[in-house]
Length: 316
Ligand SMILES: [Zn+2]
Ligand SMILES: [Zn+2]
Image 1 (cartoon, protein in one colour):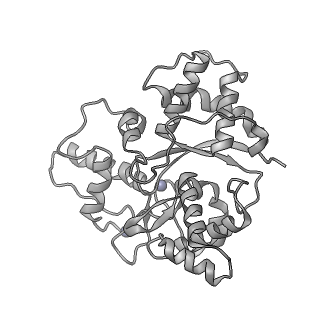
Image 2 (cartoon, rainbow, N blue to C red):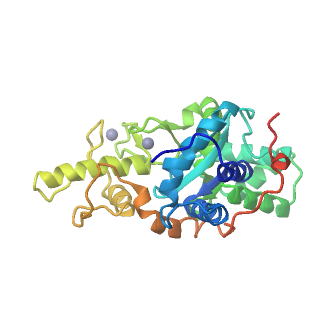
Image 3 (tube, helix red, strand yellow):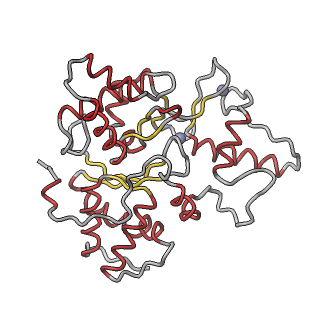
């Protein structure tokens, strides 16, 4: 496949969308590519949008926008390992807050407090009520209604998502864009994934309390899948899932939950030829169907038209 190296109109439009909205889940991206396909008569097959994006459009776009300190990156949710997002990161923005510049100082302060409370808690999540009380205690004047609207916007813009027991947790987008801030400020509260070595806030941890091994759910799924293949090859039905370092057996619940979500288990091995990687994009449609339907009800079905790029883009 020959790829033109110049940006065409549909590439430029896609860049504008990303600059405006910041992040998309897979379903939103499929809708967006679909709209561009109709408008520019692109030869992208239905159900092939994600592959067309990650293998064709994205590398070319990144090649052009990198010189401006902008890059579109793929990131997987820590909470739901099949949720994949595409985030427009802007390195020229100040260290904190790397949020949309349309957020007010007050809103950014709320987010900063939310982030602190979530990261420093044991479960890495926070009840919205605790955030509200904390900002009131910090003399930030705000009504409950204003606070609720701000939280809704954080959800919509993918800075937070729903956590367990009516809490909120930091969205994969926030972890990606604020990675260096989080790493510098909360070094003692965060982890590095044993498998990919990247920042980890909420993931799976070794059941051995004296072992400090943590893994992303998506990384754990790949690790346990490798182990389960080895076990199968050895023709024994008894799977063991030892910690990669201390060798203590990991919780069966943890293991089955990550393997199940990835549609992989010992009994029912997929008949598809294995490529050696658990590839999410083969299940694009299912993933997209499940995506965000529970967490985020404000997902647009159609991408907005962008009137004027300079309205939203403060690159000074
Ligand atoms: Zn990892
Ligand atoms: Zn361990």
